[in-house]
Structures are given as C-alpha cells and as structure tokens.
Image (tube, rainbow, N blue to C red; front, side, top):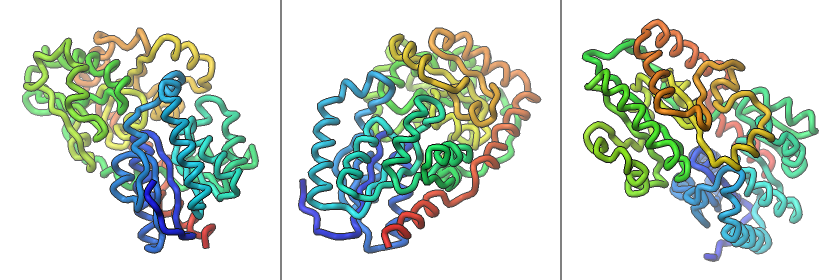
Length: 382
C-alpha cells in the first residue's frame, strides 16, 4: 500500500455496488468542498476513484450480490479485510463511512469499533426488507446512520440507533420530469432495457428484455430500444449475453451510458431489473415492468428471509402493486410484452402512471442529502 501522510482529517469510505459508488462519490465531493483539508481513502468504484485522494480497490467491479455470490469472492474479501485492518492500525483514520453493501461493510464497521474509530452509515442497507436483526447490529457499531427513506428513521430508533433522515440522494441528480405526449408520432416508441448492474443480472435478464422489445417492434416497426449500462461493464461484457438475439443487435438497440438521465427521461416504457433503477424510472415518470430472475437456491432462501410483499422500491413505497412485478418463472417474454402493450395501447393508463410515479418525489424529502450527511459528519470530527 502506498504511504499516506499521517493526518487527523483522513476519512475511509467503503461502498460495493454501483448505486453506492454513485452516492458515495457525491458525499466525498461534499465533504471535500466543505473542508478542503480533508483527504479521503476509498474502496468502491470508478466514480469514487475519480474524487478520492487515495483509492484502494474497485470492489464494485466484482459484482457480488445475493446470498451465494459473496462466497465466490471469499478469498478476495478476506484479503481486503486484512488490508483495511492494517490501514486502520497504521493510519488511524478520523472516521469510517460505510455506504450500503452490508455483507462486507458490517465487517469494516466491526474493525473500526474494535479500534475505537468513529463510524457512520450513509444509505443504510434495506434491513426492513429482510433480516431486520441487522438494524440493531448497525446501531451498535455506528455513531449515526443517515437514512434515505423516511420510515427508516423510526426503525433504527426502536433499536436505540442514532438515525437521521437526510432525504434521498437521487433527488440531487435526477432531472425534473418533462411533460411529453402520451404516444409518439409514427409509432416511434422509445423502450428502455435495464437488465441490472451486475454481470449475473445482465446475463439472466438481457436476452429476456430484448426479446420482449422485439414483440413491441413487430407491432410498431419504428420502435427503438435503449440499453442502459454501467461504466463497470464495457460492451464486450454485455454483447455475449445477447447471443440468442445477436442478429438484432446493432440496428435497433443503442447502448447508453449517461450521467444526466437525459435519454432515460425520454423513454415511453422500460423493462427493468429490480433495484435502484425502478426508483429512478419512477422519478422520471417512466412506466415499467419489473422482473427478476435468480438461481433457484437463492430464490428459495430469499422467500424465507424477505419480509416485504414487493421487490420494487416503487411498490414498497406506495404500499401497493403500482408496477407489475414478474419474478422467476413468471418473468417471461409474453408477460413482459403484454404489460408493455397494456400501456402503449392505453393512453389514459400511461398518463395516470406517469402522474403516480412522479408523485413519489414528495415522499423522499428534499434536495441536499449528501450535504446534510457531510455537515453532520464534519460536526463530529470537529
């Protein structure tokens, strides 16, 4: 590890998935803008690497998710934990900030607690969805937990956690939805394909979503699809997942990597893997069908531990099935296409869905989540 000059203003920040990388990068920028003397050492992804003073490892590119995937990376995780332990003992950071990614980060928090290094959680794991016992563990290991959904604050306070609702960080980066026609001219429907941000998700969902898109194209020949990809996975990692539909690839589907959501905001409908993308679509007023497939063993475990009746954040927040969820064997080309046509062929339903989805903004607080969290952290450090 490269030598780092001793300082009492060095912060260690750890994230492990693309959305955590995005929001951790925003927090880092706020911390360094508010106190230019701060240095940041991070483990995360490409966005964090761009804004950190020192970067240790791209954990996001590993793509460990679910119940079984992390075991495949056991030796890597063990190596990183040892590296973090040494870093804490030799550099002794002013504080540690964990960003989501509980499976790895609870070990990081344990290392910090054992060494009496203050720790914070920004974007708490979704303990309300599964394994609520984790809330008490997080409460015990942190000075403060910065939560992004209003109902999470009370959940942590029940287990004597110091939790603060700071608002959802997506509000700071998502553009306001713009009014647009219910149906495009000449049937030029713009269909989004969001298969996930991890390689396993992409391989399971991408062929399914592409085939569903071509059902739409059979009825509307001028329809076009936009495949949204994360920076961690270049085209050569995506195209192999399309072998069964490769003949359509270059002509009708455009790969999009964007930071400003301008292309996404213009979608008429989206086929979406469960995850943060569902909430992003909603804030832009994009109707969608949500699908998720996972290994059978993982699904059987998930059924026993997940406590919510829904898998999409939209339905969880609205407490009703506002968007169609298709899980496991129900995630078929026929059902996905049928749901798309239910909107494409019904302008009134399309308008109502856009209104309901954009209304979620009012439930997520106000702009400035990262800034509010940064202010709290800097207050502790001072």
